[in-house]
Amino acid sequence: MYLSISGFLPDEEEDDSLQFDLDLDESFNGQIVQLLGHGSLNAMAEGEWLLTNEQVTEISKIIGVPLPTNLDLFIGVLA
Image 1 (cartoon, rainbow, N blue to C red):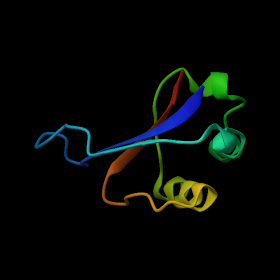
Image 2 (image 1 turned 60 degrees about the vertical axis):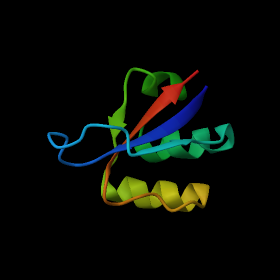
Image 3 (image 1 turned 90 degrees about the vertical axis):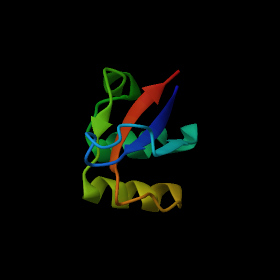
Image 4 (image 1 turned 90 degrees about the horizontal axis):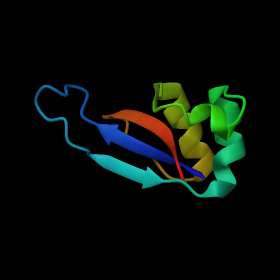
């Protein structure tokens, strides 16, 4: 299982299509699960979670990739 980040325009009434998609390397799972305050990856698998601006910044630091700040970013678990 791995984490995936999806991004959508903040005003979905105009355009609700996927604007950003990034599958994260499994090596980051532990750090990101801890950052988000979930007990485990399995606990996160219950849905997709909207990321705050602070979480986006911290995840960018962990993965070493700048994430878009102009989108609503969600994180979820994929098998």
